[in-house]
Image (cartoon, rainbow, N blue to C red; front, side, top):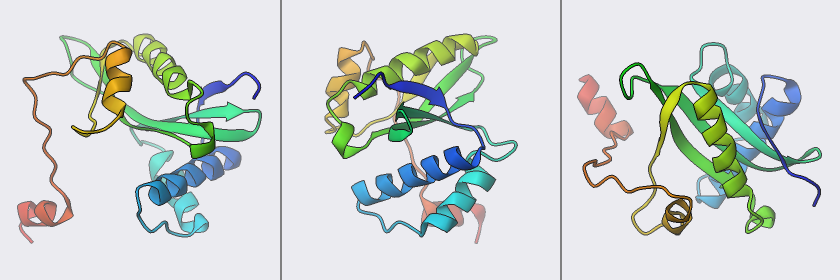
Amino acid sequence: MAEIEIRLATDSADDVTAVAGQLREMDAFYGDAAPDQTSVERFVRDTVLGHGSATQVALALDGRMVLGSAFFAIIGPSDPLKQLLFLKDIFVNEAARGKGIGEKFMRFLARHAIACGCSRIDLTTGTDSPARTFYDRLGGEVDPNRIFYRFSEPALRDLAGR
């Protein structure tokens, strides 16, 4: 494995294909039925990397081979006159796990957050996830004052008044 590059995805055809492939790998990993590649590429081009989207994607590359991805957004406000980087997911392909790519993503995201004027990175993980050990090792702090809520699609529809 050569030097791994972490960079932001663009809306180029190659990056759209790469991000779509990552979404399909994530679906398979989490046991979800992955839509066909063409539909996922359309979603990535129009929604994930589309004009006006807050979503950003970082890719881990070994040459042209995609090893993983990180999905995040810069949002605010955070601390007075600051923003924060909210990390939705880091996903490293099975064959590339255990090679330090997750840490490379976190270092890249920390530099990106600072360059964008963010005061922190926020993320969630499962209470029993092995990722907790990873984030603890990197200096992440559990915030005991926060509870993560989710309004899934049925609750979202109820809330919207359907």
